[in-house]
Image (cartoon, rainbow, N blue to C red; front, top):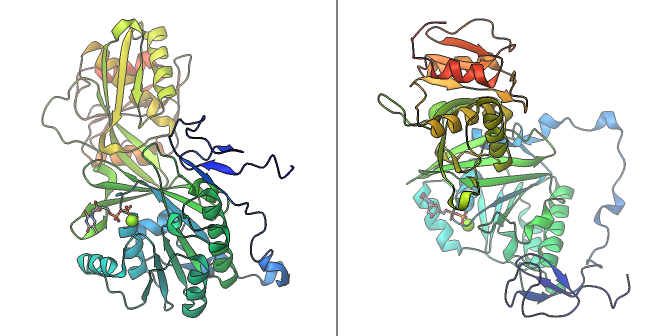
Length: 457
Ligand code: TYD
Ligand code: MG
């Protein structure tokens, strides 16, 4: 690429690049968002790991010895069994989610004799101290560094030699080599890479905090997703619930979620989250509401799907669903139209999940379909009925894994009936739970809406 054609201006809202400055971004429409970028093609120290030695594979330490106990079980869970030394974690979330709170609690509880360096560009040391007092965390091993110029940060790292390095946030760090405006794509990329290099060569665990905009876009830090080992999203549910979710993890699975409750003393772990997303009701349920045992990571969570079906204005159906994929909602609506003659094509469909949990597993399909059907017919599903299963376009049900564990979780919450796909291996019914296997969506509807008869199988 010739020097001339190289993009020199980048939109700070969407990272769109232009060779010339523009008042308005042609990509996202933001005004006055273009910033000049000095090319980061030549970083200060070209290849840091050049003089590293190769090692025999058998001599490499095993992973377990390389993990630190976070001191917070939910964080260990999401990271796949603790914090890997020499790894880089990006923790991204909207402002106000509690990223700084989590980082400070983590800094205080992490099980290491070494020191933790908290680089803060967002808050003054006094503010961090006040927060620490509020959270009642002991901070003997925590050092706070208020500078944000990269070389100063790296010098502090060399001096303090932290085992855990927290940078809050990466958008506030800048390298004078490429300008003084923090938060640009080049700054985030260069500073992120240098900090990652520092942590990797010293075997320290690095946490980079990144802000996400309301639309879920990681402005700037998006470029870091490829550089780090693990990307965690910290999300806000309803009534103080916070969800920590791995979207990339080189050292573990990505389907575990960590669940916290934000309170007066900061973030508390939720010990038994099985019923956290369930609304307890006396007597009948409203139409459109269905309970489902979903399997997230290694846990079963009972969630409540809520749906509302109302005539569409102008006759064009729309789907409003941000906790369950909207495409999946449309698909279930189509299945109901075709196989149960439910008229949904001229209706607006609103779908929500209690507690604000995002659910991606396929087992949510049958309960979702039943919720839409119940809402359309304005007929409630009998109370204490739980539903799970995958639905094919042909209206057949497909078995879901971990059926035994789901059934147990449902029974523990005193449900009396579980409707699930036939063919799923379920050894024995937990006491008090009636099991209703169904092969098709039509059978499932019959099984769900049949009058309740507690205990009957
Ligand atoms: P914070 O960690 O500053 O969020 P972030 O770094 O992601 O922007 O936490 C923000 C919110 O958390 C703030 O609105 C106040 C609330 N909060 C509590 O409710 N209890 C607490 O003990 C603390 C420290 C914060
Ligand atoms: Mg913060």
